Image: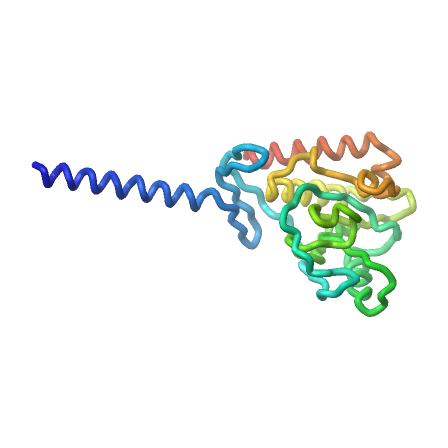
Length: 222
């Protein structure tokens, strides 16, 4: 009888320990090749429900580490995402990426971005998300930057660029437990007219924030 009771206690103890181990493992962000899975965790913003979101297609073309465009400084905590525009109409995402790469030789300035979105919606990643880019001045240390290509001087994004921006920003917000309140224009950091269309048309920026919120809600409730 005593032996049976001890066996029951041992089995229950094993189950409890196994449950704690599983729960610990499920509180981590799991990065796959095309998916982020965020399990329940406590963060500065509170608990998160079990859910996942697909990563948008990325053309990863990392810059060479150099002091002019990829300094290699560690970005320890992401507190926001900054949206920019390239200000050079008609250029592609890869052309802008190659310009950043060329700065290691030209030394013309210090500039870069984590991501560049082209006019056809293609997304090129230039810098890992755990490193600084040279894009947002004093916010380089705690933000991820996204440059968007344009077709003309109006600075308005194509529908394809806009859709990819919503998708990429939503995925990054999910990955780093951010909301639309954590999204910034370059203008909000320095007062620069960037991204031009979102600065000169405030209502379009507000619509973009709403679209990101709706996209995230729809994706995480699927």
